[in-house]
Image (cartoon, rainbow, N blue to C red):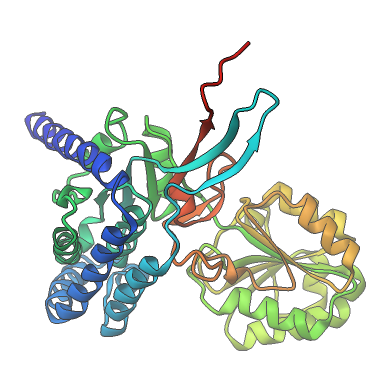
Amino acid sequence: MERNGKIHVDMQALGRAARAAARFVAKADTAAKNHALTAMAQAIRRDEALLLTANAADVARARNKDLESAMIDRLTLTSKGIASMAAGLEQIASLPDPIGAMTDLDYRPSGIQVGRMRVPLGVIGIIYEARPNVTADAAGLCLKAGNAAILRGGSEAIQSNQAIAMCVREGLRSADLPEQAVQVVETTDRAAVSALITMSEYVDVIVPRGGKGLIERITNEARVPVIKHLDGVCHVYVDLSADLEKAVRVADNAKTQRYGTCNTMETLLVHSGIAEQFLPRICQVFLEKEVELRGDETACALVSRMKSAVEEDWYAEYLAPILSVRIVADIDEAITHIATYGSQHTDTIVTEDYSRARQFLREVDSSSVMVNASTRFADGFEYGLGAEIGISTDKLHARGPVGLEGLTSQKFIVLGDGHIRE
C-alpha cells in the first residue's frame, strides 16, 4: 500500500509538470518544434552505439525470462531501426504544422465571421509494449501537434526507452522547450499505469499500443478518454467481377507480407461464382508459404488441404500464418459477414464493377475501407500522415491511423468588429 502511494504521488508530479509544459508547447512556434525534432534525430544517430547497448541489455533480459519470439523481435533494435527512428522524426519536422490553422470561415447574416481553429489536445498519455521506437515516434508526433506527452513503455524495454528519452530531452533543450514536454515513466510497476489512466485532472487522452489484454484493461479502467483499437480482424472480399491477377496479388500481400500486424488479412471472402476458379489458385500460394487454411464446407470441398473452420475462426485475429476462408453468395452476404465478425479496422474489395465498389465503400463500417488494394496499406506513413500514434476504430474524434491531425481538436472562432446580438 505504501509503495502504491509513493507511485501515485510520483505520477501526480509527472502530471502537473506535463500540464505546465503543455501550455508552453501549445504556443511554441513551428520553427522551435522543428528544431527540437531535428536535434532529437541528430542525437539518436550520434548515440547509436549507446542505444544498441541499452537495447542489448533489454533483449538479454527478455530471453532470460523466456518471452515469446514475436515480442523479442518487436523489442530488438538494429542500426537500420535506429536510422528509421531518426528519419521518422525528420519527416515529422517536414510536415505542415496543424496548430493554428483556420478553416471554414464564413460570414453569418449578423455580420460576424465564424470558423474553426485547430488546437492541441493538451497532455497525452501513451502506454505501449515492447517497441522502443514508439518512444521516439510518440514524442515527435505529440510535440509537433503542440501537446505534452507522458510515455509509459513496457518493462521489457525500460533501458532502451530511457536511452531514447535522453535524446528526446536533448532535442527539447536545444530548442528552449521544457524537458517536461516529453516524460518517460521510469518505474515498471503496473500501479503507474493505473495512476496514469485515472489522472483526468492532468491527462486529456490515453493512447494504448499493445496486445488485446493491455487495451482491454485500459479501456475498462480508464477515467480519461481513450483512442484505441482492440482487434484487427481484416477482410478481403473477392467479388464476382474481380480481375483474378489483381485478386491473387492483393490477397497474398494482405496476408503474407507480414503476419503479426493489425492490418493483416485474417479472413478471405470469395464470391461463389468465381470460387472454383480462384480459390484453388490463391490457396496454392498460401500453402506454399505454409499458411494454415480454415474454411467453410464449400471452401473445404474445393481445397483438400483446408481444415474445417469453427465459429470462433471468423472472429479470430490470428497474427500468425493462419487464414479463415468463406464462400459467400454475393456482395451483400460479404458485407453482412464483415458487419457480424469484423472489428471495424480495415476491409477491402477486389472488383472491376464500379457500382459494387461504391456499395462496399458506403456500407462497410470500418475505419479504413479499400478497393483493389491490400489491407496492409492501413498505416499512417502509407496514408501520407508521416507517422502514426496508433490506429483508432472508435467513431468519435479520430478514426483510422492517428497522425498529427488526430492529436489535435478544433475550437470555434468568431471574428467581429464591435458586433452585438440584436
